[in-house]
Amino acid sequence: MQTLRRPKVRDQAVDQIKQYIVAHNLASGDRLPTETQLAETFGISRLSVREATKSLEFLGIVEAKTGVGLTVGRIDMGRLTEHLGFHAGLLDADPQQLIDSRVILETGVLPCVARRMGADASIEQRLRTLIEQFRSVRDLKSWIVLDIEFHRTLLESSGLKPLVAFGDLLHVFFQRFRESVKKAEWKVGIESHQRIVDCLAAGDVTAATGELRQHIESHKERV
Amino acid sequence: MQTLRRPKVRDQAVDQIKQYIVAHNLASGDRLPTETQLAETFGISRLSVREATKSLEFLGIVEAKTGVGLTVGRIDMGRLTEHLGFHAGLLDADPQQLIDSRVILETGVLPCVARRMGADASIEQRLRTLIEQFRSVRDLKSWIVLDIEFHRTLLESSGLKPLVAFGDLLHVFFQRFRESVKKAEWKVGIESHQRIVDCLAAGDVTAATGELRQHIESHKERV
DNA sequence: TTCATCTGATTGTCAGATAATCTAGCGGCG
DNA sequence: CGCCGCTAGATTATCTGACAATCAGATGAA
Image (cartoon, rainbow over all chains, first blue to last red; front, side, top):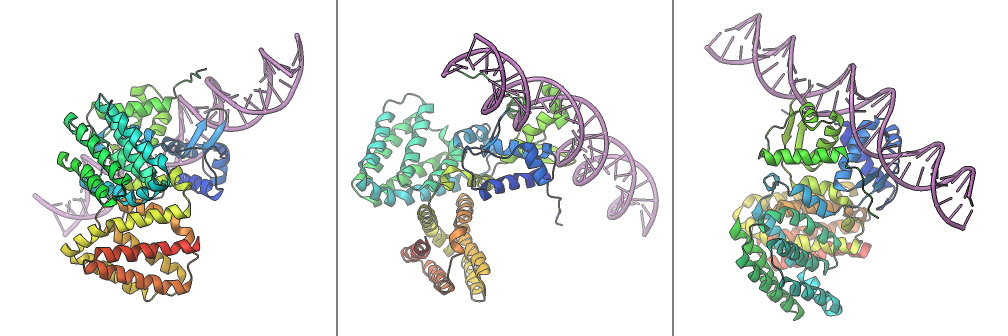
C-alpha cells in the first residue's frame, strides 16, 4: 500500500526558497527577502519559513545575521564533514562502491591533468610542493589533511570544478577509512603520490592511471 | 578585533543532540527522546529543539515521524547531492566543464558496465528496451526524458550509486542545452545510443568509450 | 568633519494552543 | 480463539503573538 502523505509545509518552503535563488540568479552574499516577507509570499507562517531557512543555513545555502537579514551563502565541505563525520556509523554508503567511484573519478581526470601540466608548469609545481610537505608529517591527523589536499589538487588540476565538488563529497564519506590507516602505510602512500606525479610529468598517463588505481584500491584491504 | 557573539541556543541544541547520539552509542533507527523531553533536558524551549532537529533532519542525521517520534537517521549521498546543486563548483561551472565532466563520468563507468553486462543479462535487456522506446518518440520533451533515462540507466548499470547521484546532479545543470536540440539530431542520438550498447554487448569497451565521448561532446557545438 | 547616540529593521527565542498523524490497546464479532 | 475496526494517548506539525538581541544607517552634537 502506498502511504500518501501530505507534503510538509517546511519542505515546500525549502524548495521555494531554493527556487527563488535560482530564479533570481542570486550569488553568494546577495540579499534574500526577510523572513516575514517570505512568509507572506508563500502564504505560510513565519515559523515554517524559519524552519526552512534554518535547515538551509545548516548546509550553508543561506546565512542569517541577527539584525541584518538573510543572504545567500556558500557551501563548504569542511563544515559538512564536521557534522556528518561525528558518527561514522550513520553514513550509508557501500565502501566498495566509494572506492570504485573514486578510482573512476580520479583516474578519469588524469589525461586532462597531463595535458594541462604540459601547458602550465605551476600545476606540477603545486603537486610537488605538496609531496615535499608530506616528508615532514608527524601525526596521522596532518597526514590525512595532506592526503585529502593532494587528491583534491589533482582534481583541481583538471580545471573541472564539478568534479572537484563531487570529489569533496566523496571524501566526506571516505573519512572513516582514513582514520584506520597504519603508520607503515603512510610511506607507501607518499611514494605512490610521488610516482603518480612523475608519470604525469613524463606524459605517461597509462602508468599514472595504474599507479593511482592501485593507490586508491589499497583501501579495500581495510574494509 | 574579535567579535565575540553569544552562542546561539539552537546550535548548542544541535551539538547536544549529536552528543546524545554518541554518548548513548545510538545506531540508525534507534529512538531519540521526544522534542518536549529534549527541551526540558537542555533547559530550552521546544522551538529551539525543533530548529535543531529540523536542521539535523535536513542532513539525514535524524528522522522525525508525525505521531511517532524522533529516530536516528541514515545519511545517504543521494539526499545530499539533491541540495548540493548550490555548491559553488557547480553554479560557477561553464558549459564546457559540464560536458567534460560528463564525458569523464560516463565513459569511466563503461568498463564496469561491460563487466556486469556479461554476468547479468537483464542489464542489456533494460538498455535495449529504452532504445526501442526512442523509436516511437514524437516531440522534443519526451525525447529529452528518454535521453536522460538512458544515460541514467547506463550509470546505474555500473552499480555505483554515488556516481548515479552525481550524474543526476549534472543533468540538472545540463538541462539548458538539451532544449536547443534540433529534430535532425534526435536520430543521430538514437543511433549513437544503439551503437554504444552494441559495442558494450560485444565487449568492445574502447569502441563504446569513443562513441559515448563523441555523443556527449556533440553538445559542444551548441554552446 | 568626526564621533557618539538613537532608531528602525530583522533575526533569535519563548510560551501556548490547535491540527494531523501514528501506535497500541480495547472490545466486538465470526 | 483469532481477526478487524475503533478509540485514546502520544508525538510531531503548524500557527499566533509577543518580546529580546543585534546590527546598519540616520541623526545630531562637538
